[in-house]
Length: 105
Image (cartoon, rainbow, N blue to C red; front, side):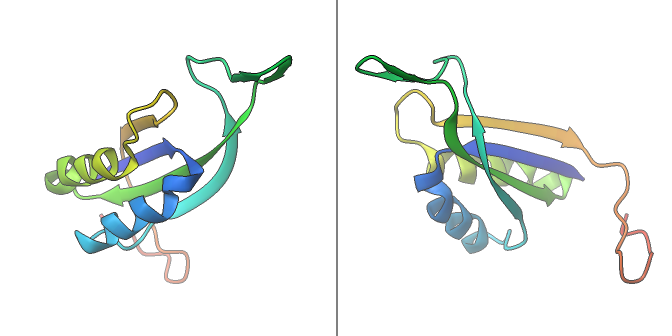
């Protein structure tokens, strides 16, 4: 299994989560976060904002569906402007259900 962490614009959160649910990925975790990328924040007049509001989505998918989930996130989060976000993919070694204590993998 793979864990996908996507850092996206907050205004794209509902678009991305709806798109993921439509293609079969309804379960996810999301956080409102603050961060900056290559753009080093944004300057408006004399004011510099180093930390920008972002949304972090986390979804765990089976290996054979990872590309589909990634394409869905990329397509639905795209605005064409700097700051659209990043997607990180990592391997999930084990998953346990808290209520039962049983391993899922």
